[in-house]
Image 1 (cartoon, helix red, strand yellow):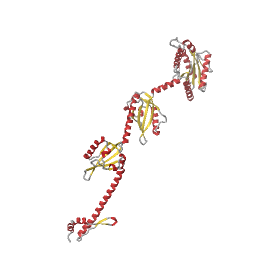
Image 2 (cartoon, rainbow, N blue to C red):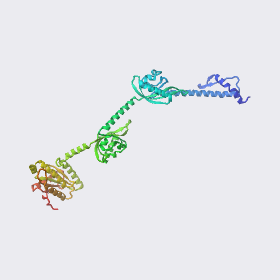
Image 3 (tube, helix red, strand yellow):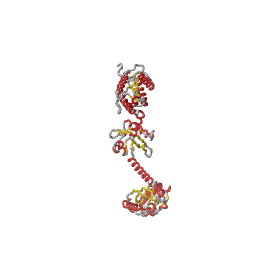
Image 4 (cartoon, rainbow, N blue to C red):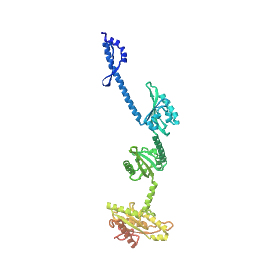
Length: 503
């Protein structure tokens, strides 16, 4: 028997011929086997033939598995290709369409049958885009890189639509470019929305930069993210000085607490319980101004609060006007003393405080003596001047904590609080009589002399209510009038002339 190695060498050249001519038979379970026939097979050849038979069967199975995998991948790719949420198309060097998926039909309106083998440019591109398309094609061939661009296209109805494109070359096994693949997304609606947003932003900026009110935005940390230029006119700060600053940089402590409460409510509920709230702003020079604020939340597409936007309106002049009106409603227009309404309000508060602190208060009812004669002899203008000078002297005669009010024509009332003994009230009454006894210089008239009669009543010793206390003081005053004027008296006590009381 020849050596094993020699038998391999002499018989191996026959193997290709045998493999080429061996018929195939079906094996079990649908598999395929190859059978070899030869009348002069040696033991060595039989061994080689057996190995070759096994190798051939394994090779064919491998090829078929690869083919099956390729077909499965192609099926998957086809599903993706047909159902992708974007237009997918293939085209050759001559711009003829060779592939066209369903989404392309939806975007452009042309069916697959209508587009296959037709010119890409003829149906999808307006004339204005042809030159750009040729340049893109040249770049694709030259660089072989993916190109992203945005173009205006035409749909079947001739309407212009804006698409975002991605173009890539398709190569064969040798690397040669044999065509092109393109993805397209219709962004017309997005483009229009962006245009509308830009227009809206331009209008907002134009409004914000020219409106008298201050428009601002805050983030969730209550820091300023935008403020309109009008803030400089209101507070002296330039907008860039406030960006990133917290609320505390511009609000008084009390207003900061109010603003924090309002913003917390808006964050939770999205709106204010009332239309506006009022704050006091700190200006760059340290002064303050009052403003009305309207605020709402800024939300993202999911409805989550991202910040706040508000409008601040300067109401300094309005507030001053309101304060003037309030002052006019509660003060005598001639003397600027509290009027009867404010007098009773303050008397109520003083009585409540006296009860709480267990310190009595006194009420002086002051009526001028001989005032009618001044009006008759010198005219009402002189009489008004006298009343103003009397009001000034009364204020000078009492403590800052006490209240002087005009409650009638020539009648005044003085609320004296914290009266630890009746003598405190009597001393003030004596001082008032002394001040009013001095001549009053009046323009266009000689110095005018007049006096006053004063009735004194104490809370809670003489009365338990405002009306009763005023009535008791009034009764004491009329008692003085009957007994000689120019004095003061307390009900149940002798009428005291000025400077003639027991210390």
